[in-house]
Length: 350
Image (cartoon, rainbow, N blue to C red; front, side, top):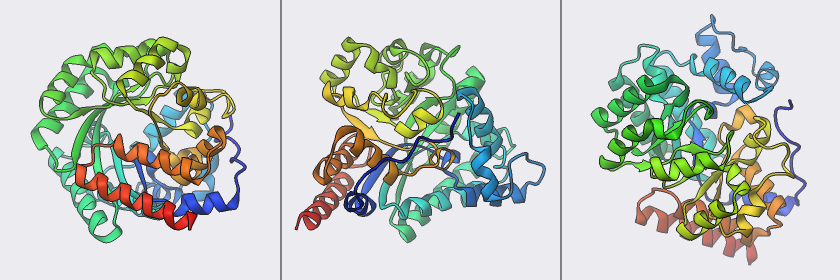
């Protein structure tokens, strides 16, 4: 299958507006955000890896046959992270790429259990991401927060390890608890005890659901895991009752259009359920998932959404506001970022 769908046809004026628009991103994976430049540098550090060391060869390497192949490639990149310095470098350089896109705030999904499998101590993992977080905010103006994510395909041991690290280490930037990986064969309810403990400790619930399975997985995430946001949730569009429930309760969806096409979750951008969800009154946010792997970035995803929804600059600014108000940024931080969005739009209109 192709790596990513064809770029949307949009006006240059709107593209310039989006490029300067202050933005928040809520569904973006830590390792999956590594640009070809970062991946090639990590591959060069660890030459035994099958991952190409030439950034140009990564285009073919990041061409996915299906979701299972995507997971296989993703794991090979995860295995490049073998030291504390690798984690720190990756995190800071991801923030640098975000700054170039006018991203002011991001909730980065981190899968610390995978780093532990490389024998990196818990304390070293947290020290690396926290050092990068503080430096990124001070030097780049990008505020990072963490979602600690269970790699669902590794089962209960991974859930136990992820929860233990979250509760024992309690990094200052940690705001939420997630669940990723394949959905088939790994029912959301299996991880209910872990989410119950994470929620009791003050973390927000943000599992993936309904990306590669039907709407029943979204229902399970809402019921068993008390989800406050849903990662992807594309199949919710198949269930009018679920759409009505999401609209009534205001639970936001973290949509990633290009990712959904690249992994085969939806057949094409034209078939993406984003318009149907908006028409049903569901709160939606626009995100990238694993941007370099899918040949996209957040600016491109906003332009995809603008095309699918027929939006002008004011409509795009509303999407940006959705991400801010659906975030776990503190109220003062939200107010500051919303004011930046308003000022950008006012200057554009003027």
